[in-house]
Length: 563
View 1 (cartoon, rainbow, N blue to C red):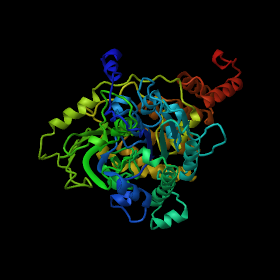
View 2: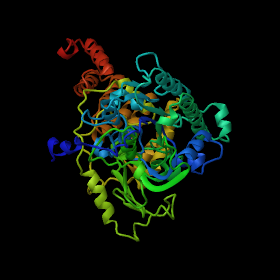
View 3: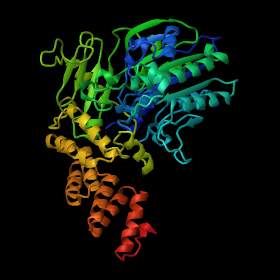
View 4: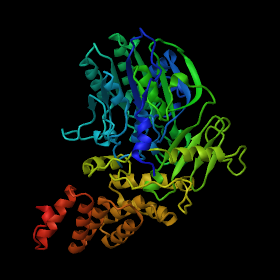
């Protein structure tokens, strides 16, 4: 294993990142990230006309990258890549709600602030809560509040806009600034204001995109009106797309097809160079990091995965993306992909190969008779997966309410990263994401039925999933909870016990089984699981409350840990 000193030392060597010529003073930078936004949702990328007039105008003023990919179809890992220039195996954030970005990371905001730049962030979702570490280096990190009566884990575009404008109004105008603004609206559920739904022809998802575009337009207008625009490099990028049913995936996160990993990426330079250009070079969200450091005239580290978008050129590289969501949540094999100008290769227990130029919807797997050797793709993936990485950050526990909110948004959010992640090249009898993508739609429907108060109707959907994939621990969680909801405690106990065997050891797994045991009258066994939950998280409030209640009921003295 590499020691910290062997790989971190070269990473910390700061070299000039295309320093500007003497006399240039434009140093401001704005990064606008669009959550869950497909490239083809934008009119300037060939989407429905009239949905994104402000982004279309921005594309006419700058450079539109037609061939951009994310590093992961998940919000936290993708944004970590933008702010560090590293792929997920290297910055170590592989899913939402697992772990924070290590403090050893060198972020865009940290480097900018060290050079005298003001740094502000306004984010729209608890997925990017400060607990997950992306606040490193920001003078102000404005996120939805968890302790001020804020009932929702996200905020709408107009609220994000107001916060961003307020932050700009308070800045020191004698100093350069870096502002990151994150819009979350196109994430499920799609509930756009009526006017934007009508603007999008009744399409609810596109209506959310239109609402975001309107807020973005006001932000751009403000930068122009206060004279900031001419001294500001502006980057707009989506963290990932949305499948909308393609390849059997209702939303995003589990698969790495282009419906979720191809993203819009726009850059407007302050000198208006290359205005209106459409650049076909293959680029990645990791390129945001060196691009904005260059724009801010800030020295950047060597050894990152990104390259400045100012130097992008056709045929120069390949890019990496991954999803470990299936391995973490569904009992699937890991999934990683390498894309270059010739092909797209997906490594899992069932590899796939596609020709994006002639098969943009990735409907025809050509891996059985590949027109080119896949060996270079294997090598490129292994180089990323086995390369130097940041040491993982230890965290005692995340706020349970935060994790529960993330799970309500559809994420696993275990709050605890596994000690290691397997390579997709390891021999595995786990099913591939391609093989088991058929589970995604019924799983989403089962969750929606339970949320709507119809748990009995969800049972056959979950049982069908588990009949084909008995290691799907999230389906086991859902099935056990639905059985408890209809009073079938004995069946629920068997399901939760099976879940303990096949899934990760988590506090909520012990709480679920303990609650089921308590409802069925087995208080002593329930107490054992509440104790087990507290071994994992000594401050877990539900486990503390339940343990204290049961100990009183059973006539037991308070345990030392409870005092």
